Length: 107
Image (cartoon, rainbow, N blue to C red; front, side):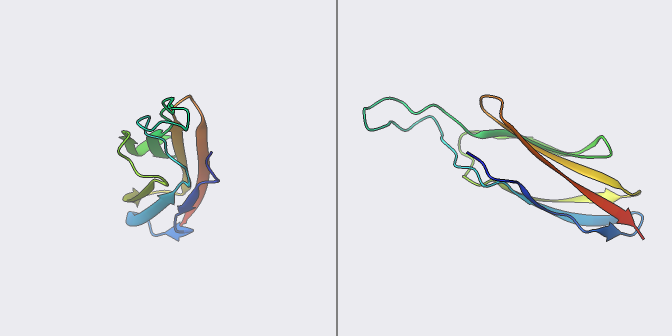
């Protein structure tokens, strides 16, 4: 139901630099409010949590509610003091997990 996550992280930064990170996950959200052609309620299926860590430390996290739009997009800043890896994780109702990683160098 979701495609591969798309993430933009600079390939390198200066020590202490604040960088901008952009993420997008193509995902058809279902709020749980609609009904199918037979009148049965379509179960809720949304991305309910997003997290970003850098070298295992939390950078950004949020819980999402049914009002979130399809294809959730996030833009946020992070300070980079050392080289390492950003890990991005989206969790869907029902337990499906979508994730990707991006490395960044210093210098």
